[in-house]
Amino acid sequence: MEKIIDGELLNIPEHVAIIMDGNGRWAKKRLMPRNFGHKAGAKVVEQMCEDAYNLGVKYLTVYAFSTENWKRSVEEVTGIMNLLRNYLIDCIERASKNNMRVRVIGDRTALAPDIVDKINELETITSKYDGLNFTIALNYGGRDELRRAVSNIANKVKAGELEPDVIDEELIASHLDTAGIPDPDLLIRTSGELRLSNYLIWQLAYTEFYFTDVLWPDFTVEDLKEAIRYFNGRERRYGGVK
Ligand code: IPE
Ligand code: IPE
Ligand code: MG
Image (cartoon, rainbow, N blue to C red):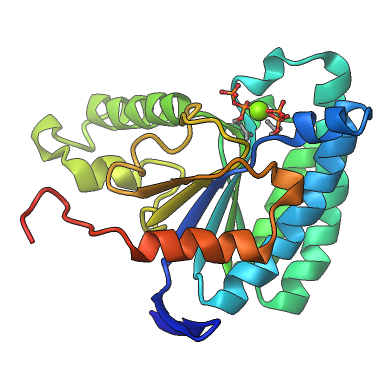
């Protein structure tokens, strides 16, 4: 989709994936505890859902908590989970107002039962909306997602439901948490780190990457526009020649 943004005709990426990083450093700079940064970061997520959709983005996928983030202190993990509880409650109301469909990817089995209930409720209620497709990666790891997919496929083979030689890329993709969601066109990582940290490792195979030093709680619509302008300067070849 093309759209005029600040007087410039831009090709808008259909799916933007974000690694929201830098909350801890943002808080530290203010001599505040890390969870203060997470709280500020959660506010930015809300704003970004509106901004991205207004710019014409159809899918937004954010990394909220990785399978590796359990290594952090009990205090920080508890703080993030409590923030999440409140966020999920607010999200039901906001999604209904903004016509937003919300999905959660990642392994839910390690999450508290009340959080899982809220996720199910949010996904069910918002499944009828056709505005922004917003996906939250929670207790998500790309390797763990592939492990779970392989295990499901292996069980189907064992049960005689599937022949091993029909396993193609499409079948694998349909067993990932992101089944039905197109691959991201643009990945944004904030806070100056140049790595994937186990995010969407299958889905990002041909995605354009944009890195910025801005810390996530400082990220604004202007930074998103900058990332989209960068995306417009890239030539996507998918292995071919142009
Ligand atoms: C990203 O910010 C949010 C989560 C990983 C939950 P960080 O908490 O990683 O912030 P930094 O990288 O320590 O600054
Ligand atoms: C990635 O950030 C995970 C999230 C943003 C949720 P991290 O801060 O956990 O990644 P590393 O540890 O710097 O690789
Ligand atoms: Mg970090």
